[in-house]
Length: 304
Image (cartoon, rainbow, N blue to C red; front, side):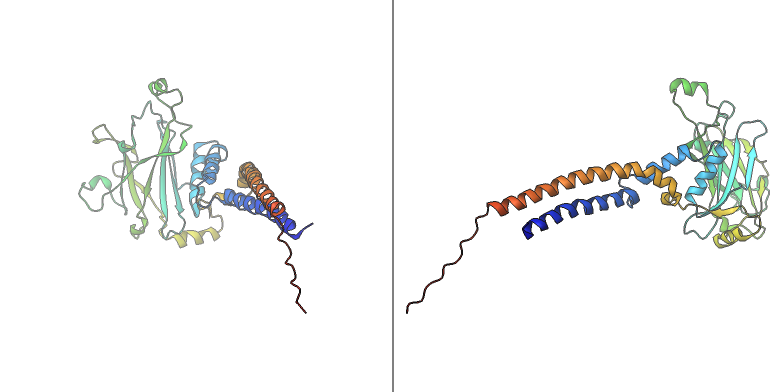
């Protein structure tokens, strides 16, 4: 076999393998999330792996996004009238220097609590052990935090209004979430005083949904992320490492999920690149066979 044909065959084999390997690696890691495989995995994780109860799902959400988190909520409250539940988690986001306190109101009985949008809930708080009832609205110690709708998981424990289901039989309710961002400014007593107010349709105070008008005392606030991390070494600590938003840290679970996708993408890439490489090989060999051989140069006899 001619050397040129051997080279053509080698190229014909190598090119599809290289292209397929590159595409398979890209599909698995999806560094720019162009193919959306990590997002699809997170959606799958939300649906299949977050847990059964809403508290388990909320804990899994905190675990997914955090570098470190407390597996036990610092507040785990059930409304005495059964209208809602409140959970507040302490955790550290990736590359953050301070601890974040994230709260959720969930298992809401919308037939009893007239919440139509997140703006109707507001957190009133102070970064010290203060009486919120004595603070005027323009007092610099009186701080506020807004709620937002937590669309990551549907509130499976919520009581939905019949009229909402009449309008849309697939209607889903969602929890509400808020954050105490500036815990670095908490006073030396390491206490946040807060309450959750329910506002009416004109954004005026309606009632205190959680705590009292004087406020609920959230004590033993941890400010520094390094201090929070070091507490993992304490005996009986419930603080542990999170996943920092990286789907690959799910390990075998992610591999099992992504393998069928990588397999079919690799198969398609192999077939297409293989076909193109074979076409290249045919053109290569055809040109070689059809190109007439150059005549050998004739020797000119020297005259004696």
